[in-house]
Image (cartoon, rainbow, N blue to C red; front, side, top):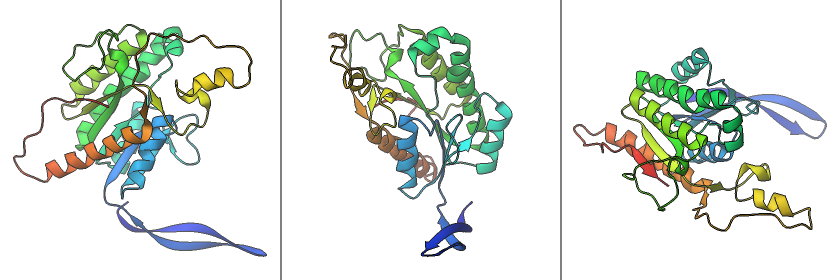
Length: 257
């Protein structure tokens, strides 16, 4: 997985098509991105890939052909991909993020947002990989934004509660992990409903009717490219720190975008 490997590519010329074996450079730094098919996951995978990282993304229903298909609820499958790929960094973007689905399927949502996150943290710790867990500002009640790392969480809905429990599960299984609490996201969407920002357009673009929206929420829309850049910078800083003996590492694992 490191150095130079052979890769087959298809070359088209007028009247013919042929397979050509070419040598490709494989970067030495390895990152595994879960939820790589989602809005944020795609941006994170792209950011690492474009900055000299060997990036492998995994997903489930939409994984193939670009990403590895991994069921994060299958502990054997998670163990296999982590121990086979041996990533230096894991960015855990996968989650059930739809509040209505979480409310209607609480057990399934908890298995993915909490149990799978804890298991992933344990597997990362076993090989010494740096884990970045993507959490949410839904862990707060929204009464006094913007929030800082030291503010006390107080989630109001089940989604926020599962993300907070996911944080706890990650840090209990991996003391060296980082938690990144992010707000509402927007960016290059494949579907308008991928973002709470663009979903508003989906409600009005083909209708002459007005859409009901609240006027009291204070949100902080953040572009996925900016979050992806922060993830890469955190990863590169952690790898640099590990090369310096006796370098102090902050005991506060919580970050806010």
